[in-house]
Length: 378
Image (cartoon, rainbow, N blue to C red; front, side):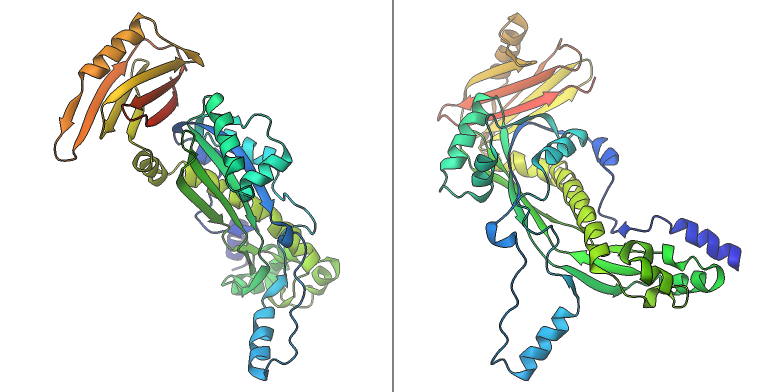
């Protein structure tokens, strides 16, 4: 019996556990990046009113029933804030950039040129009635980006105690038999702090994707949620019955929330749902795909005729004979898709360098523009 419990305990040892929707960054990096060059701006910035703890509401004049409801709600609140008091940017901009790079979110990522903290906050909050977005859009276009990834700030939330988890019988039994129940996650906490972001068309500034992610509930063991004296107390009392200390729990939950928010942002950006939505929401459909033999295929479906196309290879505009032949094949491939009332073009560009970064910009007769950037895996 003791041996079986010890084996179960070993399986539960990673004592801060979260829901199954949060993946490891290395795992997410295995999936192909989205085929766009992103310009990163904004930031995980709290609005000024959320940077300090909320003041208690005045309950004078409230009836007994509403006071009772307020007390019931307050019982679950461990602390009214997830993030540190007075900190404007709880998740550093450089941390977001590094996570996006390590997670291979995109074929190419740049930071908006000359992007100061003040400019990033204005863009995140859209505080200048579109002026800040116009500046960001122009900078991103000049830098050769296809889309702008705007981190639109954080929304603060309290840390809630959800209660004892269904592992409490195991924690109690292991504590009773071998005294190690304090290492088993037995209490669930939750923060609904929210990270918001959007993808914008670099040529129009139009929002083509809205993102909003929150963290999953997390289970903590006694050793993660209690101070020294409560850990000592668990010698006499089963761990699930020992209360939690705010000053211990808050930092653990805060760091886990930050980790989960970034991982969920990466997962959402790399999802098939996002790829398809971008193809639908841009002015027309442009798909750039890698083929075997260091080739890329370009497929365009547009309600209008294509007027012009530019190609960059490894950051330099290309117009050699190979590219000219490709452009000719592309234009000649035009045919109508009656069922969709669209014009379709398709051609392959071959003979590319190893690991080449290929960017294609297509312009229609009415001036609509869509571009895509693909870095070859081989």
